[in-house]
Structures are given as C-alpha cells and as structure tokens.
Picture 1 (cartoon, each protein chain N blue to C red):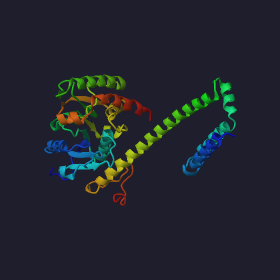
Picture 2: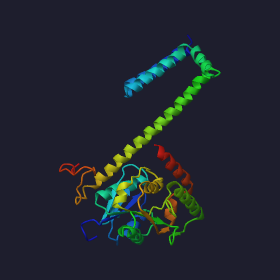
Picture 3: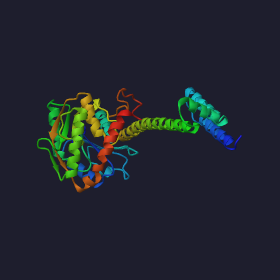
Picture 4: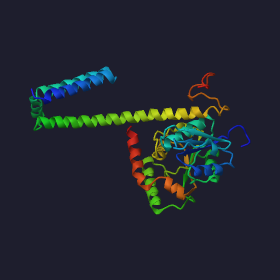
Length: 128
Length: 230
C-alpha cells in the first residue's frame, strides 16, 4: 500500500463523517453520500478499477475519467448551490419585507391590520 | 395633510443612500394630497424620520435588497393601507410631482390599469440626457418590445402608476434593477390594460452619478434572463 492511499481514505472518511454527523439531510442524500464514498474508496484501494472502467467507456486513462467525472460533479454542485442561494435570497427578501412592514405598524394605528393579507386580523395579531 | 385618513393615492419612493435629494423630493410632494411611503433599502445612514413630513411613512429594509424589492415592499404596504392608486417615484429628483396627475388620469377614467411614463413617446421629455443613455434606452426599448410584445416607446422608466387591482396582481421577484423589465413582462403576461403617458425625466448631476451606469445594461439583461430560471 502506498502512503497516498491511507491519506485519501482518511480524508474521505472525515468528509463522510462530517456530512452524516453535522449536515442534516434526507435519507436519500445520505445514502447517495455513502454510495459516492464507497466508489471513491474502491478507486483508491483498487487503482486499476478506474482504468478498466475508462477502457469500457472509451476514455484513454483512468485518471482522465476521474477528472471528467469530477468536472461534471462540480458543475452539478455549482448549479445546486446557485439554486439554493436563490431560494435563500427569496426567503430573506420576504423576511426583510415583513420586518419593515411590522416596524412601520405601531405609528400607523389607524390601520391595525394583520400581517398576512389573506388572513383576517385577529385581536392579538396586531400586537406582534 | 389636514385629513387624518391617508389619501388613497400612494406614492412609493424606493431609496438607497439618498440624503438631501430625497428631502427635496418629499418637499416637492408636500403640497399634494398623496400618501407617501419611502422604502429605505438598507441605506448606510438610515433615512431619518427628520426628513419626514405628515403623511409620509418610512419603512426600512434592515439589509440592502435592491430597488425592485423596495418597490414591492412599498406596494405591499400601500395595498395594506388601503391604496386605490399606486405611483412609483424615484428618490433622486428625476421625476416631477405635478406630473403624477397625468399618470393617474387614465386610471381614474378607467382607461387602463397601469400608466407607464415615457420620456420618448409623444411629448415626453428627457432633460440633460446623454447620447449614450438615449441609445442604450432605445436599444433596451426594442428588446422590451420584442420580449413582451407591449407597444411601448420607453423602458426602465421608474415613473408609473398602478391601480390597486394591477398592483395586487403583479409580483416583483427581481430584487435588483431587472424589476423594471419584469413589471413590463408581468403586464404582458397578465394582459393588464396599460397606456403610456408622456412625462419629463430630469437628469441632474446627482441622478446621473447615483443612477444606472450605462455599462450596467448588460448586468440587467443578465439578471433578467437568469431570473427566469431560478
């Protein structure tokens, strides 16, 4: 066994533990994480395996195949992040908007209305 | 304003780091019987209540979100306060308060639900406009005409009036400058009856320095396109 192999395995393991332990996600995502961890470990422990798969799909070297997969994975990840960010941004907008409107309410006692336009004003809602 | 009940016409002024010019705008609006809401979009120095006058409400975004978001907040607030007509008005002094009536007229007479100010169409004026800006806006107008199918002579003109109905229908999700395109797209999508009304846009040293750099047109285009996919 070469020195690089345990180093990589430990790094993968740390990443997996951090993911499973601290980042809450759905069972499906956890299984997916486990799956990729397995593939990564296999590729490290049996270096020839990537070469064999590369030959199978018509890529010259196993290293190249790994690199291509990494590129695809990275693009996928980036798109995912952008979409999450935009969702987060929408939520932030909604929160900031509501705070702005709530803060403006106290002096506007002539219009004590509820926060949600689609809900009727309750007696206790105006004093948020 | 002598009346305790706010007027049913609400002027919405999104503002970000406008100091004195905003005060001038509010002074300009003071003689008219409009309710005014300033949406301070997280300015570094909060819009002080001191610039405020009777009938002027000040809302504050605790973080900067962008002009589109500020306008939508103003719309939400005005609708909740019972607005019948809503006017969007710039904080930098580009628009003339006495032209608000021109925009309201077609709404009051029921001719349209939205009145869009135009600085280029029939009698509209753009004072002190640079050639580069005229060219960019004309190209932008062509683009807006193509993408929305609306018969318009101007685009990204922040001076417009909406009926309560129209304001309740459209929803601005483009937080930054592309909201101006989005409003047009929404008018087209919802088939809201609209008219263009010639108005005066007065470019001042301040508004030019503060306003959109021409180079930003590409950013707006990008926001506008990418916003459709998120």
